[in-house]
Amino acid sequence: MIYPITIYNPQMQAMLKEIVWQKKLEVAQMQQDMSWASLQRQLTAAPTVRDFFTALQQSIYKPSLIAEVRKTSLYQKVIRPDFEPVAIAQAYKRGGASCLSVVTDQKFFQGGFDHLRAIRYRVALPLLCKDFIIDPCQIYLARSAGADAILLIAAILTDKELQNFLRVIHYLGMNAIIQVNNLTDLDRVLELEDVRIVSINNQSLIDIDININITQQLLTARRSQLQKLGIIVTSESGIETSDDLSLLADAGVQTVIMGESLLKESDLEVAVRNLLQSKFPIHH
Image 1: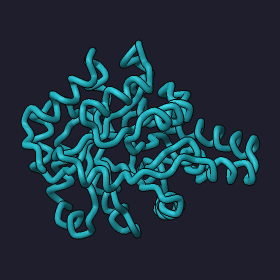
Image 2: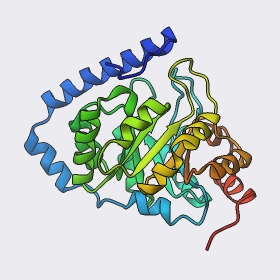
Image 3: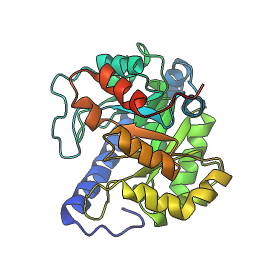
Image 4: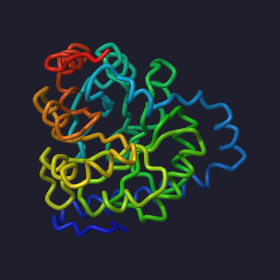
């Protein structure tokens, strides 16, 4: 179920429905393959949780950067043919990223928990598991692979699911980033308990257009409420230049998620460093 928005673009609607359906099949297979005892053992052996929230707060760059490790875009268009997850993550770290986002969906984005696990053992930055989460077992598996934060997409989850998943994520010592892209979903999220990080996705689910003004519009409407609650606001999609970062920072964004525009650069470390340092005073 896609909740609660109406998606008018048939292609996007079909894609989201297919993704959610595929996730239900994957979850059923996970539950069949793995016992609770086995999952408990994996959780016990999982790497120590790193503090994703504090890493964003304490960054010397404003806004801070969550750099994304991903191979393809939504329609499986390969972004970086020479895709080496660990090498990419290491370059991001050297360039000045505060945290990393690792896309773990396999069918639609050619990702995997193995990417998350490999990066965890080679790079010290806190890691966000970016996937289409519809069941707690995905959260447990992400934690066992070394995730420090989990993405929750408001458009595919009910209020009850969002609240329950938040409790599971926080119980495991992780943080959650709740993704919204319209005021209706943002208002739903602001009614939940213990929301710490909200991501505004500038890609519309109605017509697939990308416009960073979406972030500005939502923050114009709800910035004071988000600040009062102490929620970190991040923005993603369509962010490419230091001018974009300046614009978003002025709107009230504290951190950004960037992947595709960086991954197109031949030297990732230099691309990240240039982006972060070009127009931003370093706050000591």
